[in-house]
Length: 360
Image 1: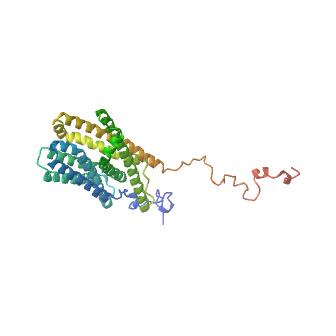
Image 2 (image 1 turned 30 degrees about the horizontal axis):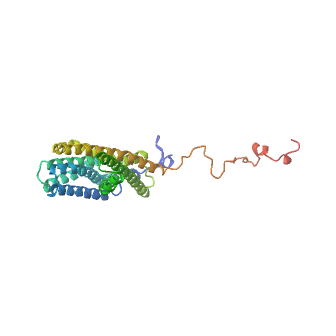
Image 3 (image 1 turned 90 degrees about the vertical axis):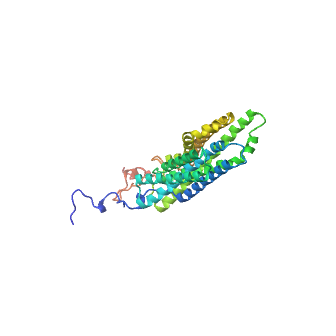
């Protein structure tokens, strides 16, 4: 059998042949995407239901417009995370079936976000009262879900899964933290004066943001570690994620909170203006709440990113250099005897003088 010129046989090639259809050529999926989608949809449903109950409550002493403005941030944040989670699950299904096709994956992510957005808008229009605020809430919620789906169309699916996990944990913590606000106000010295109440509120808000950022960073790091172990068990040749993925995953919840604030101020601008026009106290409250949400998002972003990066850095071992000595101390000269059995010059030089040749 003759060899064709200019062609290296597979058996004589210096590099091993790689199977294009092997598992290492497939994109790394985000584990637990279906569970994350169900949890995010459940959280969005809970936010929509609680907002409807608050608006339709006859015992409330404020108008539906003011209550809608207060509830809008929670609904938008939940829709943003739900759109990203469902889009991530759809992207996993498409990647398993059709491979790593970026255009198809992004189109599927947009489609998943649109399904969540249209379903949320339809539920709002069917269950909420037909007021001037209903269409604003429905449209802004749909837009947030679609934007969340577009965010989930990124190539690194495990990092997106970590962001969704950390964001869900952060949103749940914020709701649970509301039960501890009153004791913390007393702890931080809230008294009868207005200034003491304002100072205590600042410290309570900073404590909430700090703990939320720590939780976000730890959840993001834990998810990426779990995803890495699962990927290595399936394919040991799977490349490890580098530190920018951990940094982005830890900062992701804060970025989503800031993105939700942008959506609120653009899509829900008319609702916020209506609520601010009710009274001077409502205008001050809306401005204060908006500033507090931005500060909270910035704190969660930086604390979460720093926490995830520090946690990742603690898993790294010391770097090995050429100057490192072997642990067993085996850095001695090995080839001191030539192949013919004669001692080398170094060995002859180090020999005992008493045993040396007298004639020399």
